[in-house]
Image (cartoon, rainbow, N blue to C red; front, side, top):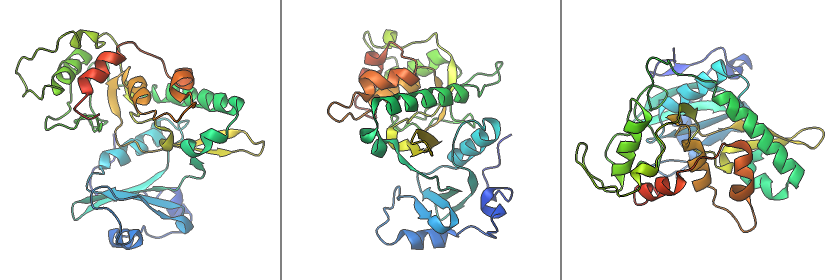
Length: 287
């Protein structure tokens, strides 16, 4: 059972155990953000002295906070920020969570030698294997967010809600129509591309944005890099098993000679055929 979507604060978390009596109010957060904060998706506000960061804005969803709560309680081996609470005010959602130590993998990666890069891949593989241990009720499968509501993947820049769907073929049928922007129920010619999508694969819980800026790392006492957290679960949910590989490959944004996509992604994610059809069908939608 997930926590409710109403305003809630978790008194049994590290924030309150450290002697703090209350979280910053939305007004405190906006004041700390300053006048340059963008209106659509402001930069999260860090309160370093409180070991706290607040993600907020009109596009932030409480579903992300519920996801973090579920992973922390059901999959304690998966490193995610501890969530301290959430609230809504004036059309904006505020998620209060642990300020994770370290830097992003995007920042650290160029300075890693090949052994350290491979070590990070091994850690990612173990973490993602653990994430896949989150299971649905086998009698009621679906594709959707953790609340069985529409997905929040930024690929779906469309007026049509992204689910929920009862199975993978239904999701792929919907996906194949997005490029044409056809209304639901209207037959469209998708050419050879719909047949390139994989129907006979399982539904698994998926982060859906494993860009290196969403992976926090630090070095241990022996100089070995360690993943301290996977952050930004806004797009997460139940997807076809191929989705994590497709999205990670798409969002690599390779610098020259980086080799992240060509060599390292397949070290921690199972590869799937069908990427070309998937990418084609999403062109002009969220790409």
